[in-house]
Structures are given as C-alpha cells and as structure tokens.
Length: 295
Image 1 (cartoon, rainbow, N blue to C red):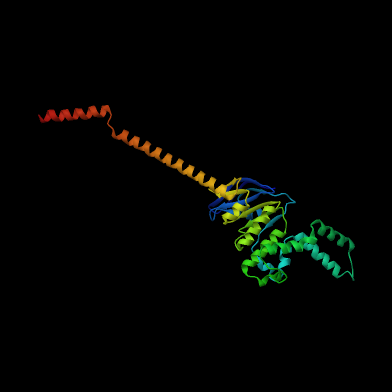
Image 2: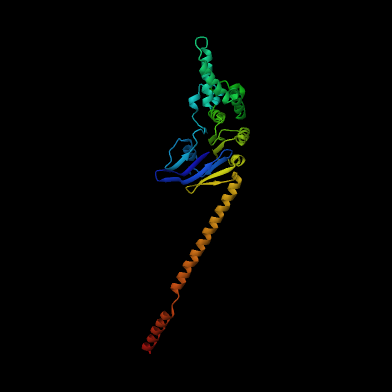
C-alpha cells in the first residue's frame, strides 16, 4: 500500500535515518519505536506529506486515503463535538452538508441532478450511519453523550485531542498515521482504541511510548536506530527481547574483539621487550670486554 525507497532525512549536520526501503501493507499494524529525537515522528510526517525527504521517495497509490492525527483543535472551537468527528470523512461530510442546503432552498429552486449525485455519494459511503459511528467513537473515547452536541470549546485540552483522534478514526481511511494517540486517554479508552485498531482493515502506523499498547496492537515494529529503519515481524515484547538479544550479542562481540586486540598488543610488547640471540650475543660481548679491561 505505502512504500518508501532509499528514504533519508537530515536536519543540518544531523542525520536521522537514511537508505530506508520498506513497504507497509493493509491489515498490518506497525509500531514505530526509537530513542527521543531519532526521527519517529518525522517518519510519520514524511509519509503524510507534511515534510520533504532529504533523499529517496514515498510512494502512495493515488486512490489511497491517509488519516493523520492532527493536534490543532483551535480550528473547530465553535463546532459541535459530534460534527467535528463526522468532519473526519471530508467527502461524505461535504456531500451531507450540500444536500441539506439544497433541501433548505428547495421551495425556491431545486437541482435534481446535483441532489442525485450527492445522494449517490452518501449511499456509497454509508453516510446515514455516519452520525451513529461518530457517537460510538466518542463513547469509546469516554466523551459522554450529553456533551456531544455542545461546541468543542466546552472541553479541556486533553479531551479536545480525544475528539481529534475520533475525527481521524471516523474518516475510515486506507491507512492511519497516529503520533502518540494514547497521551490523553484513560485506561478504558486505551483498551477501546486497541480493539478499534485490531478490527481496522487498513494499515496502521503508530508512534507511542506506551509499550503495553504497542505490544497489544502491533503486528510489526519499525525500529529507528543507528540512522537506520529496521522492521521486525513481531509485537513489541518479542521485538524488545530480540533487540536485547541482538545488543547482548554485539556487546559480546565487541568485548571479545577488545580482548583479542589487547592480547595482540601485549604479544607485540613482549616481542619488543624480549632480546634476540644477536642482541644477547652483543650484550655478552660488551660484558666480557668490560671484565677484561677491569682485570
């Protein structure tokens, strides 16, 4: 579905990663891990088209819809919470709004052809179930029904970000790009999100510091480390065990190599310090000469 080839990203003299060649497939869920500043969120922004790579390419099919978790809730402060979530499916939302406007002025003029086209779009996307789906998502994210018709501004910052997460999920895209989606969720909402993503048919790429969440959700792990992108076909726990095993093997190899170098140097020093036969004969001759002179 999504492919990267020879992908690299640098900021000035700092290289985050380079020569990344991977494919992300439908039905797979990729947890993206790495140290702070390694380039995890940058990778998502490159896939979303929000940043340009320093090298390589990102290939996304033309008809592939990407859902990206945004953090800018200020755009929707005056909109009803339920509407904000439904806006996630932009094409369907616009068709529903335009159809409503056509009906409101139907007593003056009515464009039957446009109405039919809008109705076809709504039916194709199962639009008459959109409000129920949005309400279900908000319920899963622990936003009570009594708040859902109120403007977004009534919520605290953390709950506003839950609504934006709901908006991304309601879009029903082909791929989801989620950067720290559990940051403002309680434990019940996290468990709900895990089930939602487990049932999701598209590709999921998620950055999270919540290792339990990653282990429950991920089918693959993308490790951003040593300026490389490495993919593991496993959940987080299996990846972590493999990573620790790999690190231990490397440390053992380094220790063994260090010992070999130290032993080699010691042998060289011993060889330098040990007199050869010629040097021994010369030293003995000087000693005999000194004895003769003294006598």
